[in-house]
Image (tube, rainbow, N blue to C red; front, side, top):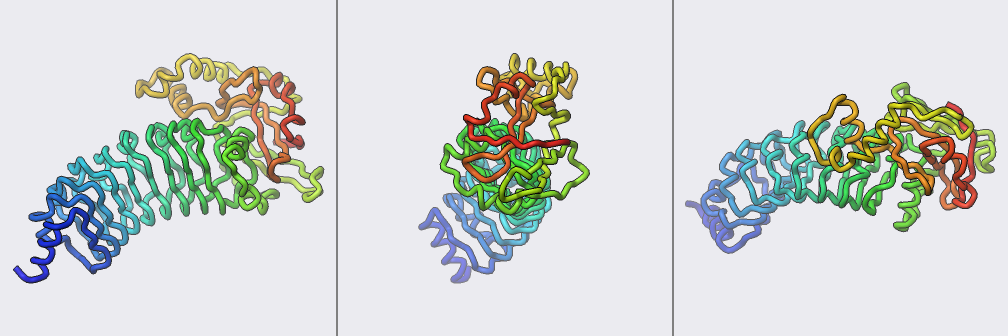
Length: 380
C-alpha cells in the first residue's frame, strides 16, 4: 500500500463528505469500495472518468453524487440499487440517453443532466415522486413529455439552451411548480392557461414568441413580473411562419402608434383545431362538448388513473388537461380544441395578449375596457 492510498483511506475514515474535484481521476480507487461505506457526499467534478465501476452500489450511505465534467457515456445497471441517493449531477458528460440505472432511482430529489446530448426522457421518471429539481439545460430536446405535470413535488424545471418549440400543456397542472426556465429555445408560445401553483417562467431569447395569454399575464403581474419588455419588445412584428402549425392569426397592428401599418403573426398551440371571432355564431361541436363534460365530471379519475377508457383519444386529450379556461367570470368552462379568440394589447405591458372564451356569448359579454385591453382585428 503506497502513501497515496493510505492518505485516501485516512480521509475516508475521518470524513463523510469527499471533495475529489479536479484531481485528474480516471478510475475510482478501489479503496473507496473497501473504506467508503460511510461516505454520504462524493464530489468528482471535472475529472477524466469514463466508467463507473459496478461496485458503486456498495457505497450504501451515499446521498449526493456529483459527476459533472467527466466523460461518461453510460452507467452500470447496479447504479439503480443506490436507494439512498438524493442528488445526482451528471452534467457535462457524453450521455445520449438517460442511463437505465438512473431510471430506477425513485428517491432522487435533484437530477441534473445539463450539457449532454439528450433528446428524450424515459417514462420511468414519471414515477419519481420525490423529485424537486430537474435540470436539462444544453441538450437537444425539441419536446418535453406531458407527464412532467404529474410530478407532484417538482419545484424547479430548467431547460435553457435546447430546441423546444412548446411546453407541455399539462405542466400548468403541476401542484408544486415554482420556477420554469426555458431561455434560448425555439418556443412559439407559452401555455395559454395559468399555472395551478404560483410559477414564474423565464423565457428570454425565444425569438419566435410575440404574445402571451391574458391569464398567464395576470399571474405573472401578481408575482411582480416586470421584464416583459426585454422578452417581447423585439418580437412584436414577427412574421416568419412555419408550415407545421395549424392556426396562425394575422393581427392588424395599424392602430398601434409604434407599429403603424404593421401585422403580426400569432401562432396558436397545435391542440386548437378551430377558432372563431366574436362575430361568429358557430355552435360548439359535440366533440368539444363531450371533452368538457368528461373533464368536469371525471377530473380526478383521469388525472390520477392510468386506465385508458374508450376511445383512447379521449383519455389522451383529457390527461393533458384543457388548453385554457374560459375567461368569463360566470363560466370558467375548460377549453380543449376550439375557442372564440380575442387578440389585443394590454395597458400593463407593451405586448400582444390572447384571450380565449368557450362560446360567442362569453366572448361578447367580456368587459375588455375594464381589464385594460385594446382589441385588435385578426384573420386566420
